[in-house]
Amino acid sequence: MTNTIPEGQGLGGLVNNAGIFPISAPLEWLTKDDYNLTFAVNLHGVISVTTACLPLLREGAGRVVNVSSDTALYAWPGGCAYNITKWGVEAFTDTFRREFYNTDMSAHLIQPGSFQTSIVLPEMMAKKIRDRYVSLPKKIRKYYGSKFVNQWRENILHLPNIQDTDLSKVTDAMVHALFAMYPYARYRVGYDCRFMYWPLSLAPLWFSDWLCSLPRTDLR
Image (tube, rainbow, N blue to C red):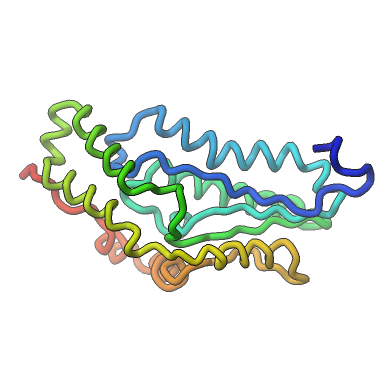
């Protein structure tokens, strides 16, 4: 990158948007590889790219725009590895913003709700859930049971019904964060993020825990 930007110009903006969500499943089903893969892209990628670009950002009085998620407002059941990375992106961005507060650089967060992108392919994810369940130890399979698995798969398959298809809402927020005279520190994008997950993050824990808790399993 230093070879493609003319000397003295620096980098005016950096957007960290790469992300993966390999599997949506209870944390007891996740493997070390699930965590490592998700961390590598969603969190370590953001940190590595931003740190590598810091000299150019400093020279160009640049802005860093990191894509977080509504999971950084409210950790979803079934998304443990993904949730951790997005909370980590928030912490990294807050740290960057405060460390460089008295410079010309700044950092901003995009918190999208549920949008229809290739990060979640329902058919593929539903198959992963079934395959992972079959591979679990017998005692864990008995605890969750087939009813739980089938319901979980149905929820994944019906995700497109609640996903927003208008991705311009996210890209418009990125443009504002990069070019507006007075950009926001955080952009909550999508009706679900603004009117469900953000209020839930402010609600009493007993209420938000009850509202989005996992259903009971087959084991009694």
